[in-house]
Amino acid sequence: MLRACVIDFKGSWDEKLPLIEFAYNNYQATIQMSPYEALYGRKCRTPLFWNEVGERSIVGCRVVDLIKERVRTAQNRQKQYAHTRCRDFEFVVGDKVFLKVSPMQSLKRFGQKGKLSTRYVGPYEILAKLGKVAYQLALPPSTTSVHDVFHISLLSHY
Image (cartoon, rainbow, N blue to C red; front, side):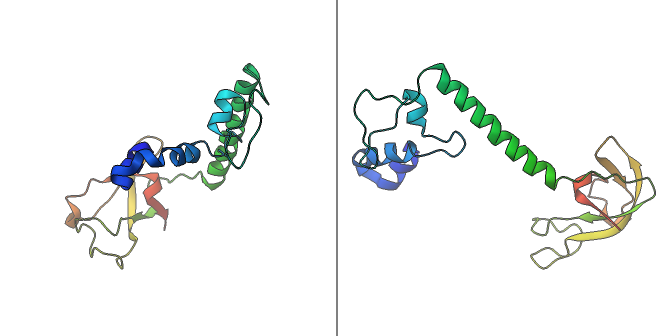
């Protein structure tokens, strides 16, 4: 953060240091407190929040336990969100699948390149399953520069 401000403010970055400190010590949603509060056990004294010197809201090991619990809760929430979007499926040898291609590749491999090119090409037949998530496809001879083994995330049912 300091490097970005030095680049942005050119020669006057030292005058902006209190603003950088204030921005850094802002509220963090994961731990539900500011880093300053997590470190020192009290809120940072700013014009927005001014408490007396010596006031402490949370003390010692209790802060660490509270932060660990909140981080664990945030991780579980993110994990749950990620797992709802995951889908478990498998293909069988002999199935037909579409292959997802990146439209903005610098090389033209599966036809036209550019924004308006197709997102999926195929259908291609699955020749072999090589591990849990890798499949070998029967590609046409015109695509000799492309490796014939693809990750399951690049395949779609025909």
